[in-house]
Each structure stands twice: as structure tokens, then as C-alpha cells.
Length: 363
Image (cartoon, rainbow, N blue to C red; front, side, top):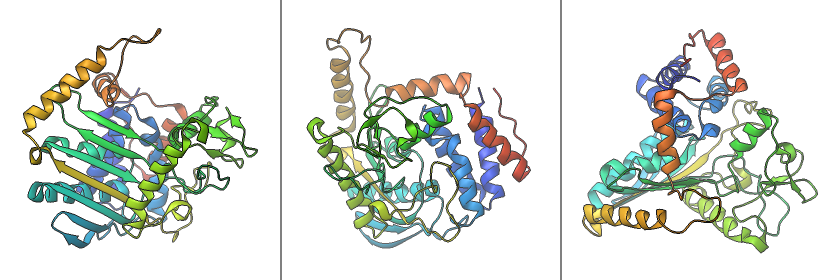
């Protein structure tokens, strides 16, 4: 177990050592550590070596000129200037929230960004303003998933997140890849030499595989729903939607043309100069533009009460609402620490030795 606060401070020092300002380093580190605190290990500390490699090779700019290049009262296009996605994403979501504060709704599309970490973080930013938040990105591993009926990969994991406030915690936070699982879960399974459930990936011959390396051996990940007979065309539709709003709308890369975070499953950063041009899309919606906020929150609570109290299938002790498991993970991990697997911990040791930053993170 590692201590969340000390791990976050270590990440801040890493980013500062690589040229980020203190405020940007803190903003980026918070996004990363919150992924681990929420139990989304695939997007937390295990990602740090990739960001470090890209910052060192100048594929990610440590001091980008993040700017609004076009706007109307409720919309904006932001150029991330190849900055760290967690910094770009927070700035863009702040623009969306400010526009919503003034007009009732704010929507921002982003180009020239990079991998932004956990999608739900940005949607959650709207909650403290009594707004509904939206976040999506086409970053990831373009070319992993073919369209339904196709064999050639085109889409990345294209995550979508939506957050809405409640009167009684936790808030509603829906955050998911539009593939059956996020690619990071395959990476975790590979690091731990674990098999995966059938239905996550197909091998090069188009057969379901329990081997997480099947994707790297010519296979591909499946969209939400799997194959067409089980509703895979719906996941395919969500993937298209994300690429339209994050890529086509902003002028960012689309589908298989979107650079990967890393070259391959070896997790080596791509060569310097290979610009990522990742796209994001953010939204914020004022609840009081429709009805009183307290009425909305009370009705959210009542809906969730009815859902939780509904009759359960055999073997099910509890029905969860989206975001509830992350809320419980946060309460536990802030007190008891964050579990890190050995390869991830070793990666942090390597960064510590390379950059000359003390690693004092044990719980």
C-alpha cells in the first residue's frame, strides 16, 4: 500500500522536474492520483512512466500555449498546443463551466491535446457548480476496434463520462470506455500474467480470446455490446459519436489517425516529433436553467432509492449506482492507502532514480 497524499506530492515533483509550472504540475498530479483513489488503477500511477517519457522526448510540451481560438457565447474551440492532457482538459472544462454560468450551457471541443487520464474527473468538475458535466476523448489506441462488420481496426477506446449532482452522496458519475473494457485493464492483466474474460478481445482469426496479449498479436478489442447479434453496433455508434465531437468538430485526429499514447504493448513512448493531436469534448449544463436545483437533487435521490430497493437477482446482495463504487473506494483509500502492483511500484522507483527525486510513498 502507498499513501495517496505522498504519492501525489511525488508526482507533482516529477512533473515540476520535467518543466511544468507548479500549478500545472499540481493540476495534472491530482487527475492521476484521483484515478487511483477512485479505484481506476488503469489510469493512475501506472500511466506516469508514459507521461514522463513523452515529456522527456518533447512529444508533450511542458509549457504549452493553451488558448481559445474561436468562440461564441456558449461554445469554444480550444487549442491544447500539445500540452499534457490533464492540464489542457482542466482548462477547457473551466471554459465550459464559465460559459454555462453565463449562458446556461457551455460546450468546448479541443484539438492538439494529448492523453488526459480519467474522463470522469472533468465531468465531476461541474458538480460543485450545481451543473451536469460531460467529458469525452478520442485519445487511446486508435485502430484497436473495427466498425461492426469490419475487420480492420479504426477506433480507440473513446471514453464518455457524465456527472450529475445529488442531495445525498455519492453523485451520479458514469465513466466508461466505449469498448467492452478500457485498454488499461488489458495492460494490468498482462503485467499480472492474468487471463481475461471472454468477450473483451478477439484474436487475429476473429475468435474470442482470454489472452490479454491477443490484441497485440493481430486481434482487436470489441465495442460495448460485443458482436452485432449482442448489440455491438450500439457501442460502434457511441465510438462514432465521440470521434465526431472530439475529432471532426475540433479538427483533431480521428480514429486510426489519432496517435497512441505509446507505440505498443511494450509501453515505449513514440519518437519525438510524432504529434498526438488528441481531441476532447467537454460540456456543462446549469440545472437551474430547467428547474430548481434542490428539486432536481431530491428527485435524483428518490430515483436511486427506488432502484437500490428493487428486487435483486439470486447472488446479488446490492444494486449500485454509477459512481458509488468509486465513492466507496475513495473513502477507503484515503484512509488505508492505495494498492500498487509490483511493476507499477518498480516503475516509480526507476523514475525516482532517473530524476533524482526521493520516493517516500509507503503507507
